[in-house]
Each structure stands twice: as structure tokens, then as C-alpha cells.
Length: 80
Image 1 (cartoon, helix red, strand yellow):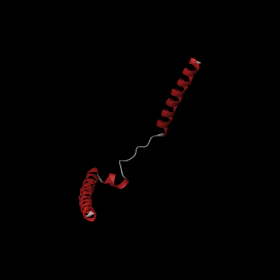
Image 2 (cartoon, rainbow, N blue to C red):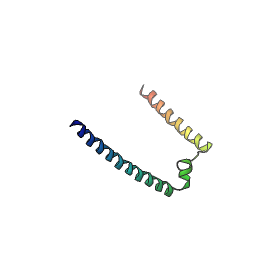
Image 3 (cartoon, rainbow, N blue to C red):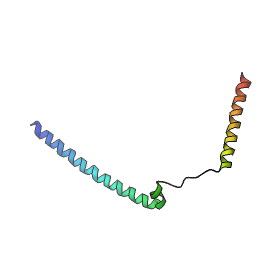
Image 4 (tube, rainbow, N blue to C red):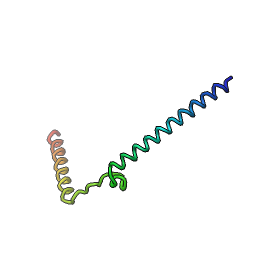
């Protein structure tokens, strides 16, 4: 009698597996459509083109960050 219960359970699980595989297929198709709509660039390198920063821009940011830290250190000295 227990084997009959297991047979039903196995059949139920197999049906569920088939249903899930169909859903995965639908999702794969949807992903493909979205990738096509995103354009060829997204397909080639996996995303939009990365921006680069000029050396002058990096220097400007570094200088600003050094000034921020100098201000923090100055405030610590004033409290001490």
C-alpha cells in the first residue's frame, strides 16, 4: 500500500517538474526578447559602455578628498 502512495507522489513531482521546465522556457524566451530590445551593444559586452575619467578629473576629486580629510583632522585637534 505504501508503494502506491509513493507512486502518486513521484507522478505528482514529475508533473510539477514538467510545469516548471515550461515556465523556464518562457522566461528564457522573454530574456531573449529583452536582450534584442536592449540592442547589439548589450549583447556584445554585457552592458552599456563604461565611462572613463580624465586625469584632470581624478586630480580634482583627489584634491577635494584631501581637503575633506584635512578638515576632519583639524576638527579632531580642536576637540582635543
